[in-house]
Image (cartoon, rainbow, N blue to C red; front, side, top):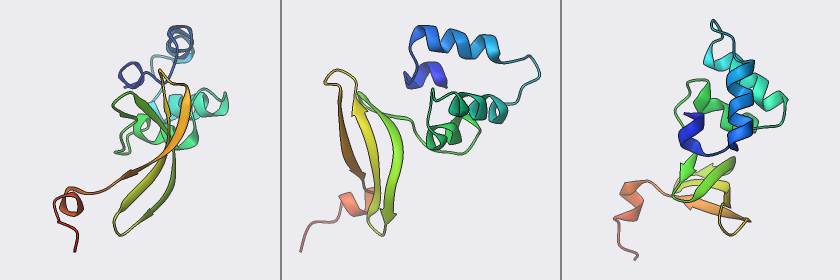
Length: 100
């Protein structure tokens, strides 16, 4: 999951693989990476087995900023542009409803 997310550089991913013992659970590895500052606590959730996504197109997601009835607002950083932005992700039911 870490490799697919592209959250870590090749060197950081190699470091994560070396620090993980053969009996380490994903939750243990995720906590260690968050403690070292390689990922955020929110990003550790999917690695530890909680269902969230980490990448939206070219934008790695960093933190959940808020949530409400029409979706979630997430902080992301565009890889190519090196710019952070807030992204609102709405459920399909809201996206298909025409405005009134």
